[in-house]
Length: 634
Ligand code: PRX
Image 1 (spheres, rainbow, N blue to C red):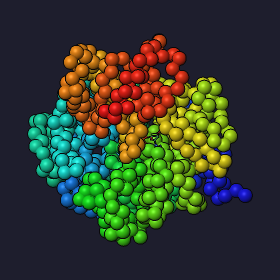
Image 2 (cartoon, rainbow, N blue to C red):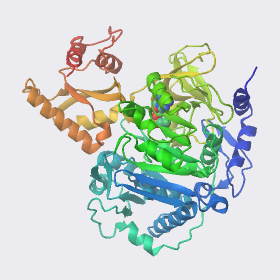
Image 3 (tube, rainbow, N blue to C red):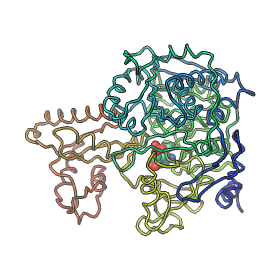
């Protein structure tokens, strides 16, 4: 017997045109698309080309007729102890003010605007203002430091940057302006204008002629009306940088029409959301979850979205549940690490508040282990729904489409292939598809990728093709770079990355970027960074470095000093999120005779596992040092 979801899925794969033509009705078009998918130049898919629409219109203006006074955005900060709520009408006004200011600063259609901001409402205004006028936003996570920011400024070449005086984490104020000034100084590209939001938390000296104060310009544009720029469905809406195998982050470029349709469809089929419901995603606008499920998805669906600045356990471990109670949150989205953090606290925090409004909790970004899923499921008494996807795809690849048909959760599995995704498991060396149950392969997706997925790598079509579509021998197929298996019922299990990307507390980091930063220390000759399993964060980065001048490193105090210097360098260049948990000093790194670093062996030993076949290894003593270092626990 086929189930409703199985039929739905089949139609999406067998008759994609009809399927996605139907989904396209979920959004407003200025000119409805005549063609659904142009796949004449694989792997580049042009969804709804010729149709014109606007992302901001669909997120904001469209709701004015029916729900102008409903809260659209609630920005809560437990760092500054503030709550601000904006109705759709107020959001509309704020976004137009921001759009008018950006236009006044010289931003036009197709220009990039880099957004480097904490979780404040103005960050969402800036994103929506960009898409309103057809400019592309490029949000850089506020936890990144000047080196990461500089490389993104250089690649995106923004006309303007929107930032704030400071963010705050756990009560510690992080001034942004010095990091931004340093990044602009480092970058070859110089933005024309910088728009600063002053929260009154840190000094933000303005560079005359370049820097502007948002409050002052907003006051000049209080009554601004800025119409939405109707753009072709294929017009890029944003770029978002993400890590891969090389040190240079890739600008994932997303379209407009396909993305709007994909999000609207996911709100219905995956999240089973209704206008007027309240969505609380605890991610950050600097990550893809923030783009899709803090800003655009919930707003497109006419929901209230909650933006949260702060930790899950401050002022106490009940803070999220108090928000759920106060705002009658229906949909909550978080990451497994956050749940593991809460699990260490007293479970009674969950019983203190009325969370009966919650329909389900979705978790993504990293593997969800069974004990964590079971604990939160027992505590909340709602379905816990794992979902697996990537910055590249913009919305879930694997999960349960409970809006189509409620299905049983299997802890440990993010679920089934979502409609539109022709998910395959591929043998890495032969390129053959693995069709049997429980066979381990690379999770791959046959083209065309469904609407909402990346169009290309910003200004680098070749890199898009070579990186994602040519890694499997003999086939043009999209690789997720994750290992997976599937059971006989179509539930998938994700078994970790096939490349050098690591996942620390749900944050995706490239080990190569961290290595480059560490190697810039004058006393580091060589370094390897690997991800090591961690009970709380999923993984942590661990560095193994060879010093140029190792004399003196026999002294533990000298080792600690150098380790501290290296960590400080990573903090300054990339940000504390990328800081390794340890920097161990070795005299030699494990390599093959031809000089290739044996990362997997290194990782295995760092995790106290068997490194496997070492016949190609140059110097067997290398792993012995690692074994001793991690064996000592220090
Ligand atoms: O390795 C997979 C892991 O995170 C990667 C994507 O990270 P990012 O681009 O930051 O996008 C996160 C969007 C939620 C994937 O390639 N990953 C993501 N979700 C899961 C996961 N691993 C296991 N289970 C998941 N649910």
